[in-house]
Amino acid sequence: MSQQQRPNNVSIDDIPVDVSNTQSGEVDPAEVPEEIRSITRGLASEQPPTNPLVVLKAARWWYIHGKGGTDPAFQWAIEWVRHLATDTPSDVNQFDAFLEYLVTIGVADEKAALR
Image 1 (cartoon, rainbow, N blue to C red):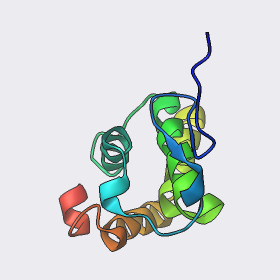
Image 2 (image 1 turned 45 degrees about the horizontal axis):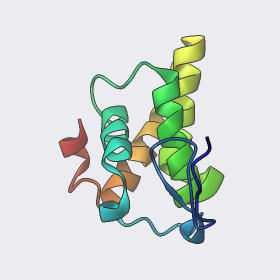
Image 3 (image 1 turned 135 degrees about the vertical axis):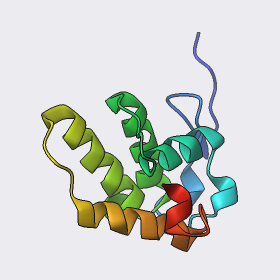
């Protein structure tokens, strides 16, 4: 039994995708689902998530609702998954850009609050 989905609200999991607001580059922190906000803040913390599927879920949301492949939250999530998969050091500059982006869009007041 399939669940009917409206064309402007498509989802493959419990986090809806607002098709009319895809890759706008304008992310309103109030519109970030709590689960994605939690994973994203976790990626900025001292103990980030270690399940790549969880991280990819956040990456997908940021790709769709942010700036696509250039979105810093998307890029950092992908970088973190690469780190988890290969156990190679992650890009410190990319992490710093990610933290700065979260402050810019209003997810945090300052970078120190994320760590």
